[in-house]
Length: 107
Ligand SMILES: [Zn+2]
Image 1 (spheres, protein in one colour):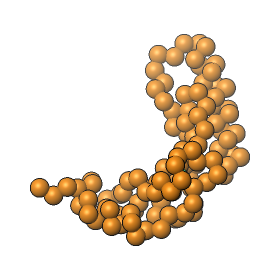
Image 2 (image 1 turned 90 degrees about the horizontal axis):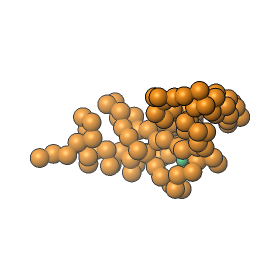
Image 3 (image 1 turned 60 degrees about the vertical axis):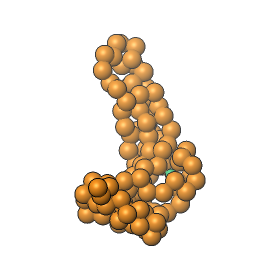
């Protein structure tokens, strides 16, 4: 049986990760230094997620792609946003503002 990652063989993905340079982590990345690539697209583009700060329900960070090494597209990802009460919504509004300010400050 051949192991695969998506539609690629694991050997192909491991070789691609080992031979494709990646930029240094942004100063704000909380992942271990040299964490490298963590996924591959169907077309062989590698992706690396850099983890930034957490603002309540919102996790900030960015994605770097092997076709644009050194460029990190910032984003915020929301955790589970179900069953929110009024206090949760107020917290979310405060946290969303803080996350937006962090994204703008780190562009
Ligand atoms: Zn990183």
